[in-house]
Length: 292
Image (cartoon, rainbow, N blue to C red; front, side, top):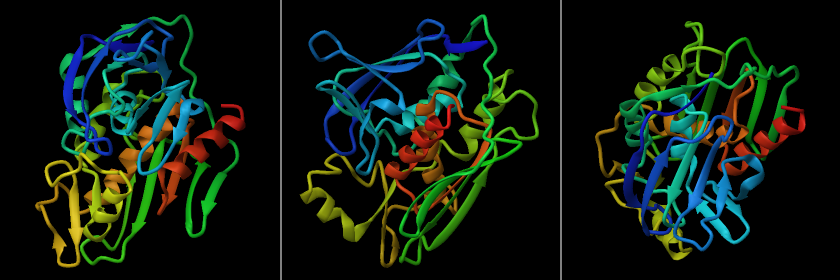
């Protein structure tokens, strides 16, 4: 079985970097279509596939493009779709950036859970690719790698020179004790339950001393204390946190969203440390190069 949405989802909000308000409508689509964006505000409504080959920018978010059309900050929405078990989705958007909403994936994941899934007989089994050898990507002391594993697992480490964040590690193995997770043949709800409670609520975060520089560079025009956690020398400007380790959980959210561009994850333990969207995408490309 593959799955699409059992109904439509509509959401409006402001993009983190562009500051532009956009409307998103996520619609059911045919079996085998995959997840893809449609820029309904542009002539000929160009389609942008949610695939590794479509990535054309990774500066503080992941951007997909085809020709002159692009859509930015796709990672939270795409993480929600794959984690909630949606194989096929048509994502119509009337602007260049997916809304940040509250800075997490909670709104997207909750909306998907609300409308539910529709099963789509595909005529073939969804085979989980098996990683046989480790794959590494590194830049300085930052790295991301994928190891052969009996289960799908994501582990992330971050290290910031501010006391409120510091060094954090988190490992997430959704549904590992339950048969039939979203990444094998079976019921996708096991993975969805874990994502909804453990990963989706984690919000994006930033450092106070970097905000002015980013704004001068034309970034985070839509950022605010309502949609991002901000940390300064004295601590968080907008507590409380949803988790004591909310920042590192959010990094796992980004990683899941970026690796969703593979279409389906290999059975592997993905381990990242101080990584970035750029390193995430490099790993995804290497996984594809190995034949997945």
